[in-house]
Length: 221
Ligand SMILES: Nc1ccn([C@@H]2O[C@H](COP(=O)(O)OP(=O)(O)OP(=O)(O)O)[C@@H](O)[C@H]2O)c(=O)n1
Ligand SMILES: C[C@](O)(CO)[C@H](O)COP(=O)(O)O
Image (cartoon, rainbow, N blue to C red; front, side, top):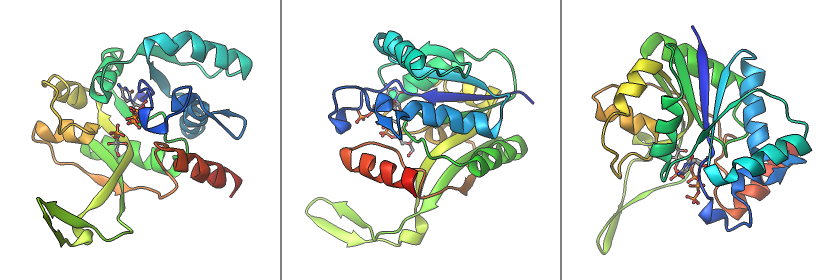
C-alpha cells in the first residue's frame, strides 16, 4: 500500500517569538524541519512526502535546502490560515489510495518505531493516533472554581496521526470549527472511533522558547 506523509509547517510560530518561523530554526546544525523529514525517510525510504509551507516562505526554504545540501525529494504545497486548512491543502495534493501520516513539522524527535506502528495500526483499523499519559495533576476550571479530575482518564495527543486516505479526505470535507485542534478531532466528528497508539515523551512539539532548550538537550542525550 502506498504510504504518504503530510508534514505541516505552514504556521508562523507566534508563541516562539523568533525572527524566523520556528520550523526553520536550527538545532544540531540544521533546521528543525529537516530533522522531521529525515525521521520519516529513515522509517520508510519509499514514502511520498508532502511539505506544507506558508507560500511566502517557500523561497526561503529552497535557499535552506541549497545551503544544507538537503536532497530528500518532497512536494511543496501552500499553507492555509489554520492548521486545518494546511492539512486540507496537503490532502488535496494526494490523488491515489493508501495511507497518510499527518505530522507537525515542529515535532522532529518522532521515532522510527512510532512511525512504523502508526502505519501498521492505520492499515488494520483505519486510523492511528499517537498519545502519552499525563505526568502532572490536572484541574477542571469552572468560572471562579476549580476541582481535581482523574488524570488516568486523559491522554496528551501527539503526531503522527495516520489514516486511510479516503477516510480522512472525506472527514476534511466538513466546515472547519474551533474543536478541530488536530486531525483525529476531524475524523471523530464524522463518527469514527479513534485508535490510540503509544507515543513518546521525547516527541515534543517545539512551541515556545523553553522547548528549544529541551530540543537541544534531547539531541545531545
Ligand atoms: N496555518 C497553519 C498553522 C499551523 N501549522 C502547523 O501545525 C503545526 C502545529 O502548530 P503550532 O505549533 O501551533 O504552530 P504555529 O501555528 O506555527 O505556532 P503558533 O500557534 O505559536 O503561532 C506546526 O508544525 C505548524 O507549522 C500549519 O501548517 N498551518
Ligand atoms: C496536532 C497537535 O500537535 C496534537 O497535539 C496539536 O493539537 C497542535 O496544536 P496547535 O494549537 O497547532 O499547537
